[in-house]
Image (cartoon, rainbow, N blue to C red; front, side, top):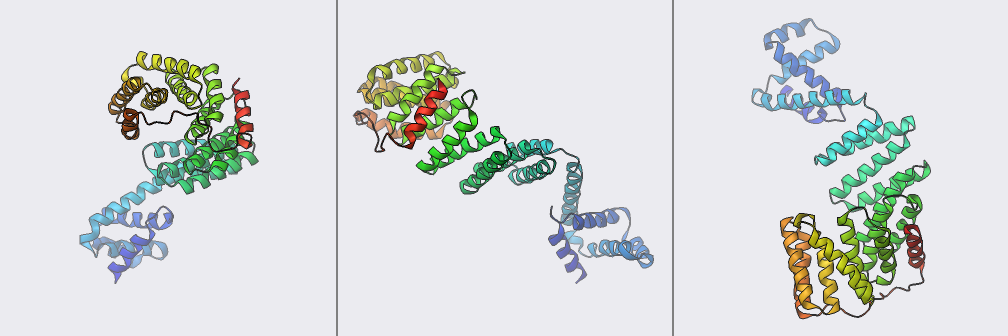
Length: 370
Protein backbone atom coordinates (compact mmCIF):
# COMPACT_ATOMS: atom_id res chain seq x y z
CA UNK A 1 0.00 0.00 0.00
CA UNK A 2 2.84 2.37 0.82
CA UNK A 3 4.39 1.82 -2.60
CA UNK A 4 1.01 2.37 -4.27
CA UNK A 5 0.51 5.58 -2.29
CA UNK A 6 3.88 6.97 -3.29
CA UNK A 7 3.43 6.10 -6.97
CA UNK A 8 -0.03 7.68 -6.92
CA UNK A 9 1.44 10.76 -5.25
CA UNK A 10 4.06 11.15 -7.96
CA UNK A 11 1.53 10.64 -10.75
CA UNK A 12 -0.95 13.14 -9.35
CA UNK A 13 1.32 15.86 -8.06
CA UNK A 14 4.16 16.11 -10.58
CA UNK A 15 2.78 18.78 -12.88
CA UNK A 16 3.56 22.44 -13.57
CA UNK A 17 0.37 23.38 -11.68
CA UNK A 18 1.31 21.50 -8.46
CA UNK A 19 4.72 22.98 -7.79
CA UNK A 20 4.61 22.40 -4.03
CA UNK A 21 4.05 18.68 -4.49
CA UNK A 22 6.74 18.53 -7.14
CA UNK A 23 9.18 20.23 -4.77
CA UNK A 24 8.44 17.75 -1.98
CA UNK A 25 9.01 14.74 -4.23
CA UNK A 26 12.19 16.27 -5.61
CA UNK A 27 13.48 16.78 -2.04
CA UNK A 28 12.58 13.19 -1.18
CA UNK A 29 14.68 11.90 -4.06
CA UNK A 30 17.50 14.21 -3.03
CA UNK A 31 17.54 12.54 0.40
CA UNK A 32 17.66 9.13 -1.26
CA UNK A 33 20.76 10.21 -3.13
CA UNK A 34 22.47 11.41 0.07
CA UNK A 35 21.65 8.72 2.65
CA UNK A 36 21.14 4.94 2.71
CA UNK A 37 17.75 3.56 3.69
CA UNK A 38 18.90 2.61 7.21
CA UNK A 39 20.08 6.14 7.94
CA UNK A 40 16.79 7.60 6.70
CA UNK A 41 14.90 5.19 8.97
CA UNK A 42 17.04 6.16 11.98
CA UNK A 43 16.51 9.85 11.38
CA UNK A 44 12.81 9.32 10.82
CA UNK A 45 12.35 7.88 14.31
CA UNK A 46 13.50 11.13 15.90
CA UNK A 47 12.07 13.63 13.39
CA UNK A 48 8.78 15.51 13.83
CA UNK A 49 6.35 17.43 11.62
CA UNK A 50 7.25 18.22 8.02
CA UNK A 51 10.73 16.72 8.37
CA UNK A 52 9.28 13.39 9.48
CA UNK A 53 6.79 13.38 6.58
CA UNK A 54 9.62 14.01 4.13
CA UNK A 55 11.73 11.17 5.53
CA UNK A 56 8.75 8.78 5.45
CA UNK A 57 8.12 9.74 1.85
CA UNK A 58 11.76 9.03 0.97
CA UNK A 59 11.56 5.62 2.61
CA UNK A 60 8.33 4.84 0.78
CA UNK A 61 9.93 5.58 -2.57
CA UNK A 62 12.55 2.91 -1.92
CA UNK A 63 9.93 0.16 -1.76
CA UNK A 64 9.54 -0.07 -5.54
CA UNK A 65 13.12 -0.59 -6.67
CA UNK A 66 12.07 -1.39 -10.25
CA UNK A 67 10.36 1.98 -10.57
CA UNK A 68 13.15 4.05 -9.04
CA UNK A 69 15.02 4.94 -12.29
CA UNK A 70 11.83 6.14 -13.97
CA UNK A 71 10.66 8.00 -10.87
CA UNK A 72 14.07 9.56 -10.50
CA UNK A 73 13.87 10.92 -14.05
CA UNK A 74 10.43 12.34 -13.31
CA UNK A 75 11.69 13.98 -10.14
CA UNK A 76 14.67 15.48 -11.97
CA UNK A 77 12.26 16.89 -14.57
CA UNK A 78 10.22 18.35 -11.71
CA UNK A 79 13.37 19.96 -10.37
CA UNK A 80 14.09 21.52 -13.75
CA UNK A 81 10.55 22.87 -13.92
CA UNK A 82 10.92 24.35 -10.44
CA UNK A 83 14.19 26.02 -11.45
CA UNK A 84 12.60 27.43 -14.60
CA UNK A 85 9.63 28.67 -12.59
CA UNK A 86 11.90 30.36 -10.07
CA UNK A 87 13.92 32.00 -12.86
CA UNK A 88 10.79 33.18 -14.65
CA UNK A 89 9.54 35.03 -11.57
CA UNK A 90 12.10 37.76 -12.18
CA UNK A 91 11.42 38.16 -15.91
CA UNK A 92 9.68 41.24 -17.27
CA UNK A 93 6.50 40.93 -19.38
CA UNK A 94 8.51 41.60 -22.54
CA UNK A 95 11.08 38.94 -21.64
CA UNK A 96 8.27 36.44 -21.04
CA UNK A 97 6.82 37.34 -24.43
CA UNK A 98 10.19 36.83 -26.14
CA UNK A 99 10.52 33.43 -24.46
CA UNK A 100 7.07 32.55 -25.79
CA UNK A 101 8.15 33.50 -29.31
CA UNK A 102 11.26 31.34 -28.95
CA UNK A 103 9.18 28.34 -27.84
CA UNK A 104 6.70 28.85 -30.69
CA UNK A 105 9.47 28.92 -33.28
CA UNK A 106 10.92 25.75 -31.75
CA UNK A 107 7.55 24.01 -31.99
CA UNK A 108 7.13 23.90 -28.18
CA UNK A 109 3.54 25.07 -28.37
CA UNK A 110 2.37 24.27 -24.83
CA UNK A 111 5.35 26.08 -23.34
CA UNK A 112 4.76 28.99 -25.70
CA UNK A 113 1.16 29.32 -24.54
CA UNK A 114 2.26 29.35 -20.89
CA UNK A 115 4.87 32.03 -21.56
CA UNK A 116 2.41 34.16 -23.51
CA UNK A 117 -0.16 33.81 -20.71
CA UNK A 118 2.48 34.86 -18.18
CA UNK A 119 3.47 37.83 -20.35
CA UNK A 120 -0.16 38.89 -20.66
CA UNK A 121 -0.82 38.66 -16.93
CA UNK A 122 2.31 40.57 -15.94
CA UNK A 123 1.82 43.14 -18.67
CA UNK A 124 -1.73 43.83 -17.51
CA UNK A 125 -0.59 44.01 -13.89
CA UNK A 126 1.88 46.84 -14.56
CA UNK A 127 -0.05 48.56 -17.36
CA UNK A 128 2.19 47.36 -20.20
CA UNK A 129 -0.79 46.96 -22.50
CA UNK A 130 1.29 46.77 -25.66
CA UNK A 131 2.98 43.61 -24.36
CA UNK A 132 -0.31 42.20 -23.07
CA UNK A 133 -1.89 42.65 -26.51
CA UNK A 134 1.15 41.14 -28.25
CA UNK A 135 0.91 38.15 -25.92
CA UNK A 136 -2.67 37.51 -27.04
CA UNK A 137 -1.53 37.79 -30.64
CA UNK A 138 1.16 35.23 -29.85
CA UNK A 139 -1.45 32.81 -28.49
CA UNK A 140 -3.51 33.23 -31.64
CA UNK A 141 -0.54 32.43 -33.83
CA UNK A 142 0.23 29.28 -31.83
CA UNK A 143 -3.33 28.02 -32.26
CA UNK A 144 -3.21 28.84 -35.98
CA UNK A 145 0.07 26.95 -36.42
CA UNK A 146 -1.47 23.97 -34.65
CA UNK A 147 -4.39 24.06 -37.10
CA UNK A 148 -7.01 25.16 -34.56
CA UNK A 149 -8.56 27.95 -36.63
CA UNK A 150 -11.58 28.44 -34.37
CA UNK A 151 -9.53 28.97 -31.20
CA UNK A 152 -7.07 31.12 -33.14
CA UNK A 153 -9.94 33.34 -34.27
CA UNK A 154 -11.15 33.72 -30.68
CA UNK A 155 -7.63 34.62 -29.53
CA UNK A 156 -7.21 37.25 -32.25
CA UNK A 157 -10.63 38.70 -31.43
CA UNK A 158 -9.58 39.00 -27.81
CA UNK A 159 -6.34 40.68 -28.88
CA UNK A 160 -8.21 43.14 -31.08
CA UNK A 161 -10.63 43.99 -28.28
CA UNK A 162 -7.88 44.53 -25.72
CA UNK A 163 -5.82 46.63 -28.13
CA UNK A 164 -8.84 48.76 -28.99
CA UNK A 165 -9.81 49.30 -25.34
CA UNK A 166 -6.25 50.17 -24.30
CA UNK A 167 -5.34 52.25 -27.36
CA UNK A 168 -2.66 50.01 -28.86
CA UNK A 169 -3.25 50.65 -32.60
CA UNK A 170 -0.34 48.54 -33.84
CA UNK A 171 -1.65 45.39 -32.15
CA UNK A 172 -5.23 46.20 -33.15
CA UNK A 173 -4.23 46.53 -36.80
CA UNK A 174 -2.27 43.28 -36.73
CA UNK A 175 -5.15 41.40 -35.09
CA UNK A 176 -7.76 42.76 -37.51
CA UNK A 177 -5.53 42.04 -40.52
CA UNK A 178 -5.10 38.44 -39.38
CA UNK A 179 -8.82 38.11 -38.67
CA UNK A 180 -9.46 39.25 -42.24
CA UNK A 181 -7.22 36.45 -43.54
CA UNK A 182 -8.90 33.90 -41.26
CA UNK A 183 -12.31 35.08 -42.48
CA UNK A 184 -11.14 34.58 -46.05
CA UNK A 185 -10.03 31.03 -45.22
CA UNK A 186 -13.50 30.38 -43.79
CA UNK A 187 -15.20 31.95 -46.86
CA UNK A 188 -16.77 34.59 -44.61
CA UNK A 189 -17.22 37.48 -47.05
CA UNK A 190 -18.84 39.78 -44.48
CA UNK A 191 -16.04 39.07 -42.00
CA UNK A 192 -13.39 39.91 -44.60
CA UNK A 193 -14.97 43.32 -45.26
CA UNK A 194 -15.53 44.06 -41.58
CA UNK A 195 -12.00 43.29 -40.41
CA UNK A 196 -10.36 44.82 -43.49
CA UNK A 197 -12.03 48.16 -42.67
CA UNK A 198 -10.89 47.95 -39.06
CA UNK A 199 -7.33 47.10 -40.11
CA UNK A 200 -7.31 49.96 -42.63
CA UNK A 201 -8.45 52.42 -39.95
CA UNK A 202 -5.79 51.18 -37.53
CA UNK A 203 -2.93 51.14 -40.05
CA UNK A 204 -3.49 54.52 -41.63
CA UNK A 205 -2.05 55.58 -45.02
CA UNK A 206 1.63 55.58 -44.00
CA UNK A 207 1.97 52.20 -42.30
CA UNK A 208 4.23 49.76 -44.22
CA UNK A 209 1.80 46.87 -43.64
CA UNK A 210 -0.86 48.71 -45.64
CA UNK A 211 0.70 47.23 -48.79
CA UNK A 212 0.31 43.71 -47.42
CA UNK A 213 -3.30 44.40 -46.45
CA UNK A 214 -4.07 45.69 -49.94
CA UNK A 215 -2.40 42.69 -51.57
CA UNK A 216 -4.27 40.20 -49.35
CA UNK A 217 -7.61 41.86 -49.99
CA UNK A 218 -7.03 42.06 -53.75
CA UNK A 219 -6.13 38.36 -53.79
CA UNK A 220 -9.35 37.53 -51.95
CA UNK A 221 -11.40 39.54 -54.44
CA UNK A 222 -9.68 37.79 -57.34
CA UNK A 223 -10.36 34.38 -55.79
CA UNK A 224 -14.05 35.24 -55.36
CA UNK A 225 -14.57 36.44 -58.96
CA UNK A 226 -14.55 40.16 -58.11
CA UNK A 227 -11.88 41.44 -60.48
CA UNK A 228 -13.69 44.78 -60.79
CA UNK A 229 -12.76 45.45 -57.15
CA UNK A 230 -9.30 43.92 -57.17
CA UNK A 231 -8.19 45.72 -60.34
CA UNK A 232 -8.03 49.33 -59.04
CA UNK A 233 -6.29 48.17 -55.86
CA UNK A 234 -3.64 46.27 -57.83
CA UNK A 235 -3.13 49.23 -60.16
CA UNK A 236 -2.56 51.47 -57.14
CA UNK A 237 -0.16 48.94 -55.59
CA UNK A 238 1.98 48.69 -58.73
CA UNK A 239 1.93 52.47 -59.24
CA UNK A 240 3.00 53.13 -55.65
CA UNK A 241 5.96 50.78 -55.94
CA UNK A 242 6.81 47.89 -53.69
CA UNK A 243 10.00 47.48 -51.64
CA UNK A 244 11.36 44.19 -53.06
CA UNK A 245 11.55 42.56 -56.52
CA UNK A 246 9.66 39.58 -55.10
CA UNK A 247 6.74 41.76 -53.98
CA UNK A 248 6.82 43.63 -57.30
CA UNK A 249 6.68 40.33 -59.22
CA UNK A 250 3.67 39.10 -57.25
CA UNK A 251 1.77 42.38 -57.63
CA UNK A 252 2.51 42.66 -61.36
CA UNK A 253 1.50 39.05 -62.06
CA UNK A 254 -1.74 39.49 -60.12
CA UNK A 255 -2.46 42.70 -62.02
CA UNK A 256 -1.81 40.94 -65.33
CA UNK A 257 -4.26 38.15 -64.53
CA UNK A 258 -6.87 40.43 -63.00
CA UNK A 259 -6.79 42.83 -65.95
CA UNK A 260 -7.04 39.91 -68.40
CA UNK A 261 -10.11 38.60 -66.60
CA UNK A 262 -11.63 42.08 -66.56
CA UNK A 263 -11.06 42.52 -70.29
CA UNK A 264 -8.35 45.22 -70.05
CA UNK A 265 -5.84 43.70 -72.48
CA UNK A 266 -3.44 46.66 -72.61
CA UNK A 267 -3.03 46.83 -68.84
CA UNK A 268 -2.68 43.05 -68.68
CA UNK A 269 0.10 42.89 -71.30
CA UNK A 270 2.07 45.73 -69.71
CA UNK A 271 1.91 44.10 -66.27
CA UNK A 272 2.78 40.70 -67.78
CA UNK A 273 5.93 42.11 -69.37
CA UNK A 274 6.97 43.70 -66.08
CA UNK A 275 6.45 40.48 -64.10
CA UNK A 276 8.17 38.37 -66.77
CA UNK A 277 11.18 40.69 -66.78
CA UNK A 278 11.50 40.33 -63.00
CA UNK A 279 11.10 36.55 -63.20
CA UNK A 280 13.77 36.08 -65.87
CA UNK A 281 16.14 38.48 -64.15
CA UNK A 282 15.95 36.57 -60.86
CA UNK A 283 17.58 33.27 -60.02
CA UNK A 284 15.34 30.23 -59.72
CA UNK A 285 15.28 30.44 -55.93
CA UNK A 286 14.34 34.12 -56.07
CA UNK A 287 11.41 33.52 -58.41
CA UNK A 288 7.91 33.02 -57.08
CA UNK A 289 6.04 29.98 -58.36
CA UNK A 290 2.62 31.46 -57.58
CA UNK A 291 3.44 34.55 -59.66
CA UNK A 292 4.57 32.42 -62.60
CA UNK A 293 1.35 30.39 -62.39
CA UNK A 294 -0.62 33.64 -62.54
CA UNK A 295 1.31 34.54 -65.70
CA UNK A 296 0.47 31.13 -67.16
CA UNK A 297 -3.22 31.73 -66.46
CA UNK A 298 -2.94 35.23 -67.96
CA UNK A 299 -1.46 33.95 -71.22
CA UNK A 300 -4.15 31.28 -71.39
CA UNK A 301 -6.88 33.90 -70.97
CA UNK A 302 -5.32 35.76 -73.91
CA UNK A 303 -5.44 32.53 -75.91
CA UNK A 304 -1.63 32.28 -76.15
CA UNK A 305 -1.21 28.57 -75.36
CA UNK A 306 2.53 28.48 -76.15
CA UNK A 307 3.34 31.30 -73.72
CA UNK A 308 1.03 29.76 -71.11
CA UNK A 309 2.81 26.40 -71.33
CA UNK A 310 6.19 28.14 -71.09
CA UNK A 311 5.16 29.93 -67.87
CA UNK A 312 3.65 26.74 -66.48
CA UNK A 313 6.90 24.80 -67.05
CA UNK A 314 8.96 27.56 -65.41
CA UNK A 315 6.57 27.64 -62.44
CA UNK A 316 6.91 23.89 -61.96
CA UNK A 317 10.71 24.17 -62.05
CA UNK A 318 10.67 26.82 -59.33
CA UNK A 319 8.13 24.94 -57.21
CA UNK A 320 10.15 21.71 -57.37
CA UNK A 321 13.38 23.49 -56.43
CA UNK A 322 11.69 24.80 -53.28
CA UNK A 323 9.47 21.79 -52.57
CA UNK A 324 6.34 23.96 -52.76
CA UNK A 325 3.76 21.20 -52.90
CA UNK A 326 0.73 23.49 -52.95
CA UNK A 327 2.04 25.27 -56.04
CA UNK A 328 2.89 21.96 -57.71
CA UNK A 329 -0.67 20.80 -57.09
CA UNK A 330 -2.03 24.03 -58.55
CA UNK A 331 0.22 23.64 -61.60
CA UNK A 332 -1.07 20.10 -62.08
CA UNK A 333 -4.65 21.35 -61.96
CA UNK A 334 -3.92 24.08 -64.51
CA UNK A 335 -2.01 21.94 -66.98
CA UNK A 336 -4.95 20.26 -68.71
CA UNK A 337 -7.18 23.39 -69.00
CA UNK A 338 -4.22 25.38 -70.35
CA UNK A 339 -3.36 22.73 -72.93
CA UNK A 340 -7.01 22.54 -74.01
CA UNK A 341 -7.39 26.32 -73.94
CA UNK A 342 -10.45 25.98 -71.73
CA UNK A 343 -9.69 28.63 -69.08
CA UNK A 344 -12.36 31.37 -69.07
CA UNK A 345 -11.62 34.27 -71.39
CA UNK A 346 -14.72 36.42 -70.81
CA UNK A 347 -14.58 39.48 -68.54
CA UNK A 348 -15.06 38.64 -64.88
CA UNK A 349 -17.49 40.88 -63.06
CA UNK A 350 -18.46 38.46 -60.32
CA UNK A 351 -21.90 37.91 -58.93
CA UNK A 352 -21.78 40.65 -56.28
CA UNK A 353 -23.35 44.07 -56.70
CA UNK A 354 -20.39 46.45 -57.21
CA UNK A 355 -21.99 49.37 -55.41
CA UNK A 356 -22.11 47.73 -51.99
CA UNK A 357 -20.03 47.95 -48.83
CA UNK A 358 -16.99 46.49 -50.57
CA UNK A 359 -17.09 49.26 -53.17
CA UNK A 360 -16.56 51.82 -50.41
CA UNK A 361 -13.73 49.70 -48.98
CA UNK A 362 -12.12 49.50 -52.41
CA UNK A 363 -12.27 53.29 -52.84
CA UNK A 364 -10.81 53.90 -49.38
CA UNK A 365 -7.97 51.46 -49.98
CA UNK A 366 -7.08 53.00 -53.34
CA UNK A 367 -7.12 56.48 -51.79
CA UNK A 368 -4.81 55.33 -48.97
CA UNK A 369 -2.33 53.85 -51.46
CA UNK A 370 -2.02 57.03 -53.49
